[in-house]
Image 1 (cartoon, rainbow, N blue to C red):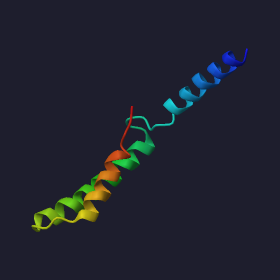
Image 2 (spheres, rainbow, N blue to C red; image 1 turned 90 degrees about the vertical axis):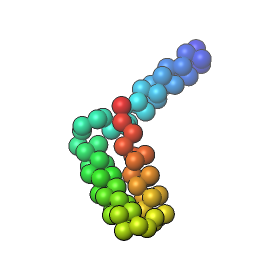
Image 3 (cartoon, helix red, strand yellow; image 1 turned 180 degrees about the horizontal axis):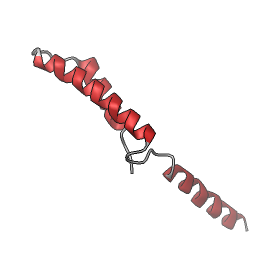
Length: 70
C-alpha cells in the first residue's frame, strides 16, 4: 500500500513539474524571448564597438536558459 501511494505521488509530482515550464508561444514565454532579445542586442552592441563585456555575456546566457520550453 505504501509503495502504491509513493508511486502515485511520484507520478503526480512529475506531471506537475512537466506543466511548470512555459509553453512555446504563451505569454510568459513571449515575455522571456523579449527579455532575451534585449540582452542579446546589448551584448552585440558592445561587440560592435570591439569590446567583450563579460557581465553582458553572463546576462545573455541566463536569459537564454530561461527560454527552455517544451
